Image (cartoon, rainbow, N blue to C red):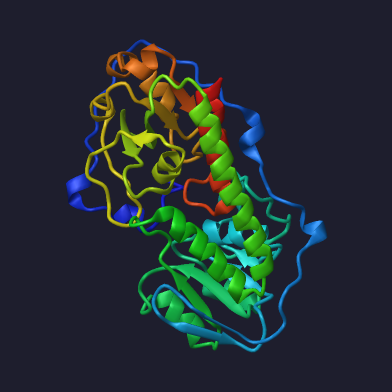
Length: 343
C-alpha cells in the first residue's frame, strides 16, 4: 500500500489482521466538508526571518548534527518532514515519493518539479547525492540503517527521526516540527505555527463543549482490501489521530492492542462492530493500490448494523489528510472532528 509506513508493516503478531469475508447489502452516506482539504497557514510570501549562524541539533537516535549554517538544501525521505519543511517555508531540494505526498498530504503544496528520489522505503542514494543536500532527514530509529551509512560515507549529515511516540504523540509531533525548524534556522516561524496550532486546539475544544454531541466516544480507522476481505486499522491510544480527538474532550473507544510506537491496532468488520455507540471516522483518501474498502464495508451486514452506521454517524475525512503529519495536518483533523460533530 502506498500509504503504509515501513515501521507500521512490522506490527507485532499479536495484532495480525483478522479478515472477514463480506456479504451483501447496506449503505451509508459519508460526505465530508471539502474546506478542510487544504489548511496551509500564513503565506510564506511574508516569511519570518531565518537564523544564519551555526546550528547543532540532536536527532531521535541521540546523534548530534552540527552545521556551519542552517540547512538550506534539505532532502526529506518521509512525508511528515516534507510537510514540516514546507510549513517552515523551506522547499526541499528532493523528496521521497512526491506523487504519494500530493495524494495523501494536502496540508502543504509541494512545488512542481521537486526531485523525486524514489520510495520512502528504498530511496535511491545516487539521486539523493545528485541533489547535493546539506541535510537529509530520514525516519528510522536505527543509526546503523544502510541508507544512513551510505550517506554519511559521502559526508552528508543525516538527521534520523523516530516518526512517532505513543507516550505523547501530540507533543512528539510538535517537538519534531521544532527540531526540523532548528536545523533549518526557522525557529521563529515554528513558534508562530505552533502557537496557531495550540489556539486551534483551544477553539476546537470550546466548539465541541458548546455543542450537543450525541456521544463523546469515537474511533478513527483506515483500512484496505485483502483479497475479498477488509482489514481495518483502528487508531487507538497513543495514535496521533486518537489523541487529537481526546485533546478535544472526546473519548477514544478503541481499547484493543496497539503497536507501541504509533498506537495502531488491527481488526476486521466484526472487531470494529464491538465499539458500541461510538462515532466512526475514517480516511476518505482513495488508495491507488487497493480496492475501495469502504465500498466493501457498505455491502456488509455486520457493518450495516453498527449503531453509528444505522444512525448516520460515520464520517469520512476529506481526501489528503495525512494521519502521521505535522501541525498543519493535525489542524485539518481537528476541523473535521468539529465540523462533523457540530452539524
